[in-house]
Image 1 (cartoon, helix red, strand yellow):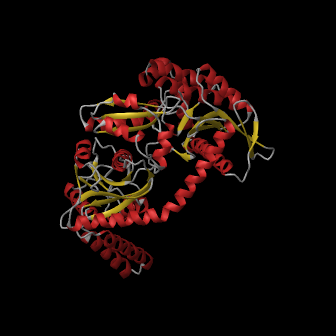
Image 2: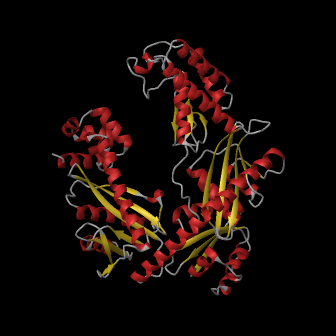
Length: 588
């Protein structure tokens, strides 16, 4: 164990956040404590195992920041974790956000599935989250079919197909009674809150009418819809005596692994669950709190209540979230907690063997990579690839992996200057922009840069890092005559053969495939928008809002090229207008 006795003796017995650093001065773990002295001392004066042992072995120094309250220390901890993303703090592996069903608060409302939720600005009635996006879409499609709500984003000048098939009341061209709209809204809201009687009645009536008109295909479709709704509602019902709206979190633990399960209860219905296995240090309560905070920032609107196990600090979480947080003690809620624990136990049992095996393989691959490159540690890796658009415009992509697992929140896309006419120029620009930003923002640099190419790309990388005075290790992955990776090239430009059957080879190959996939998907994303949108997407300083304003004002690329600087300035401002005009000139 490290000997920090002298430094520990000066640590106060006050609340605060502490930061563990490795020998390179990089923050590798951020924690909080009611009593900093007691918590920090515990790392170095007792026997530790598993992931905690790995952390302690990696610690070369620590710092701390004293706060007035434990809530302040929690907020500071979360802020520092966001900034530094330390390797020993937990990470949410699930990068997607859960969908909600929204009934918009407009004159002519729409019903739709949404993922991007602005918690500060409620646009309408939201229901969810729905862990199963298919179920959410089926529900919306069914309700949109039964109730002729508005379907279009913007009102059109004439009625469309939905009007002619009786799935819209023609709001764009006809006067619709407000009472009719309100009645539809009330019935939809009642259904989404669990009262299915009127919706089921409408489906039955439509089914009977189709059958009497000998439209058996439509009748069968409606019968299947009816069965889907009834089965779904039957599965979702929970025996609660009130209209409950809460999330319930629980966990099961084995060694350094936590199986976490969250149940979503809305208006007495179980909408679904989220479950995940995370690695933990021995601060289980802190890790669960950190997980919960990350989860609600990423995935979900806050419910009215959160139910948690006894190990967690309810008062602290209540102060942080601003909603009621408590431990279920008895009755139906206690039974629900036990059911969630049962789910966590099953998840742990099913996944542990696989996870432990995967972790072992990744750890061995990382050790092999460190040995080959003579590095102390490699955890965070960044890899780059370019793709050209229509044979002319280049786009760049970066993926980030930690311990050979993708961190999709840290993937980046790059619009590349049109002056770039080849792969090396594009790579030079992308690398410079990425690591200039790292240097200026003092954000975390990777432990290793992985280039999907040989010596030529490595020379470009070395040139960029030298110009920025950054010392980041980098390697190249060399392909044979059949375009298959067969060796890595270290920073000294020495070729090291890779065993194609080794775990290291497989993980590096996965990283290569992922960055290539990400670059190609960006390329296709722009291409699918059409040539004009693609050209605007690649223009410097032009984001979605400015692109929309340009199209609204000028309508075509030809008119944008013909526009004077003064005309462009009315939309873009002086600096961006100058860059955009130069960009358009280079397209000629």
